[in-house]
Amino acid sequence: MLPLLQGEVVGPGWIGRDLFLAGYGAAQAVPGPLFTFSAYLGAAMGFGPGGWAGGLLCLLAVFLPSFLLVIGVLPFWEQLRRMLPVRQALSGVNAAVVGLLLAAFYDPVWTRGILSPADFVLGLTAFALLAFWRLPPWLVVLLAGVGGAALGAVG
Image (tube, rainbow, N blue to C red; front, side, top):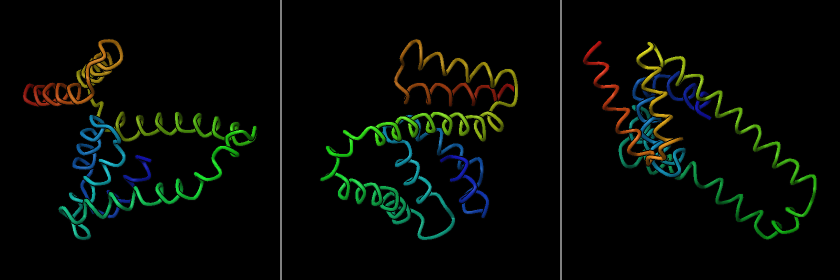
């Protein structure tokens, strides 16, 4: 979703690339990052209502299709989940999501965020804090922000 979303909002100039990536990074620290990020974009974009109204509008635009889909499918869910082709399709969707997440990590996060060996070490440290020491994501984002600011001050 990230490359598609970036192309749709950064490309036309509704929000700057740096502001987009800053909001994306901050949204990763909370549950439901896509929904949080949509509200952030609605509030921060220089297009449309902006502010609280833009944030609420974008949040509604992200949640409403899912709610409608759940309401429409819920009565049939037990029947659907017993069907082998449906289970196989969901396994394929899960695999595709992993590929999309890797693509979103590579571009723009890797190509525009890792610009030096120090950036790489900072990113690797943040990953280790999450994966091995199991620190809360909000704390890792905060620490990475402090580390990035320190790198910026030194460099």
